[in-house]
Every structure is written in C-alpha cells, then in structure tokens.
Image 1 (cartoon, rainbow, N blue to C red):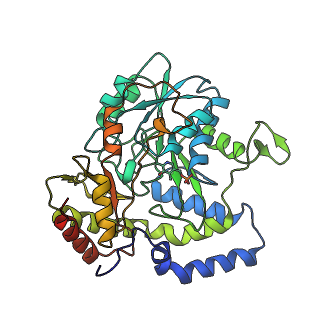
Image 2 (cartoon, rainbow, N blue to C red):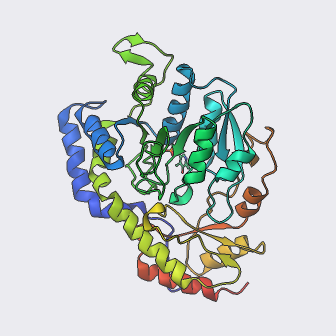
Image 3 (cartoon, rainbow, N blue to C red):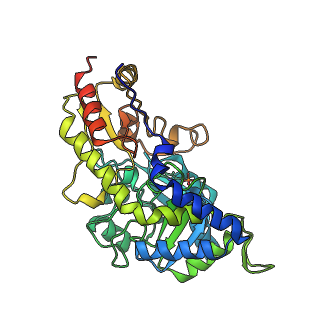
Length: 379
Ligand SMILES: *Cc1c(COP(=O)(O)O)cnc(C)c1O
C-alpha cells in the first residue's frame, strides 16, 4: 500500500478555520451569554440572508429541525395526527423518525434510480386521501425539486418540508413556492443540519428551521423553548431544542465559506466523473447545472452484487470508503413491522452504494489516484 486515503478527516475539514474558530469561542466565553442572545440572533440573520428566507430558527440538530416543524404543523392544526407524509425510502433514518415522532404516518416512496431522489411520479404513486405533506430529501446534496414536483404539490395542497441536512448551498434550476431557488427556501419549510460531517458543520450538534411562514416560525421557536411564547408562559407542551451560542459562533465563522467549500467538492466530483471508468460501476449524475448538487457524498454504485468485495479490495489498497446507507429505514428493527409498498429500487441500491472520499483533506490529485485504483481493481 503506497499511502492511505482516509474517508473523512474532520480535523482537516476545520484546519483552514482554526484561528477564527478559536477567536469566536473565546468571544463567547467572555460574553457570559451561554444560551440564546446576540450570537444566535446574528447567525439566524446571516443564514436567512444566505438562503433568501425571512425566518430562521436555530435549533439543536437536524432531526429536531425536522420534528419541530412537523410538530408545529400538528399543534397549529395544519396537520392532524394520522396524516400521511410521503418521504423517499432511501433517506437517512432521521427523516422518517421525525414523521413518526409527530404522530404522522411516513409513506415510503422508491427514489429515481439515477438521481436517487424522490420524483413527482413517486409522489403521485403514493397519494391517498390521507396525504397531507411531502418531505423531499436533497440526498447526497442533490436538490429534489422541479416543475413536476411543484405541480403535484400545488395540485394536491400538500405541505412541503425539505430535508436539507445534506444540501446547504444547493440551488434548484426551478423556482420554489416563494420564488427563490436555494434548497431550504423552496417549500413551506426546510430543515438544516450542521452535524460536524455536513458540508457546513458545527463543532458539535446544531440545526436550523428555514421558512417564509411567520406563524410556523413562532410556533417552532416556542416548541424549541419549552413551548413558551414568553418567559414562564407555556402555550405548548414543548421541548428544549435550542441552538447553543457556542455552535452559532462556530457556524458564523464557516457559513460565509459554504459556497467555496461546495465548489471544492464539485471539483472533486468532476475529477471522479472524468476518471472512473468501469462497466460495473455507475457514477452519479453530472448535470449541466453546476450548483444543483453540493456533493455531500460522492456515491457510486457497484453492480453485479460485488459491492462488499469491491469495498474490501479498496480498503486493502488504502482507500477508505463508507456506505450511505446499508440498511434503509424500513428494514431497521424499529420500522420492520410497519406496512409499506414494495421498494425494489431502494432495496437493490442499498447493496450497490459506495461513498468515496470527497471532503476537504482529499485533493483533486487524490481523487485521480483513487479513481485509478478503482479502475485497476480485479474482482
Ligand atoms: C444528518 C441528517 C439528518 C439529521 O441531522 P442531525 O443534525 O444529525 O440530527 C437528517 N436527515 C438527513 C438526510 C441527514 O443526512
């Protein structure tokens, strides 16, 4: 083995920001304000400016951003317990957990095999008299939004909650419901995660809700703060899901570089796309619109049932990979007994997916070398 290609080195990801992060941390320590306050408010304003949305609520993590939004729609009567929410079956389990947590019913839809995202067709196939909402997940950083999805949503009066955990900074080719194009500001609400491995990661857990809806924003903010609309006045049976000022300060350092970091990922996706050349490997789509995917993961598919063997050979040759996700939500013990329609695409691709190194720490030269190793593997 010549050298090691780690899948992800978070120390390397944050290396360019060490000084600014350290200064921001000291600023918070000295401020004496450790819950809420100016740091959180400034971050919310800066994120709103970036996404072009009027309301941002900083929260504790991405799952909480999703579940607080759905819960807010339930407590305000926009959704009723038992309503169905259509969600792609190949998503990370958190998308589905948020739906169940709010007392709603997740309806799992097979994704499009090439984009690996939900489509208007997929949504239409799963519409029922109880369908009230859809959760497009911009999986691996690729925007799941187009004119057909917009039509099916508007024709059926569905609420749209985008799961943008993997897609900060992605831009849709098609305008959203409010005219903007940024992922998170396309539907009625968006949920962001700043988990450390995401494209713009905090130094711990963090998340945010994005919306154009003032009532939703106020409800989410109250729910995240014990259900209180003001001090010691609890209008809901709420939670404690606030964003820490320390994480807000870290994110204020990194947010301005989101586009730069995403462009760095794009260069590597392009290098993989140009260099990987194997009949048994399907590469992800490289669309004409450069910014509709922010390449949270670069996920190839190894066909012919050889993925595990392929991954093992790569590891022996020094290339660390990962799988997002080997076991889809409906096959997890907590959902195994729940009914769902057949999900042939989700179940097949779960055995084919393989994520290659793409974060900072992996260079374009590394990508070319990794691709050569991939091309040389004999199974
Ligand atoms: C990471 C992730 C989440 C959850 O975010 P956390 O901040 O880890 O709670 C939800 N959905 C998707 C698609 C994710 O990738």
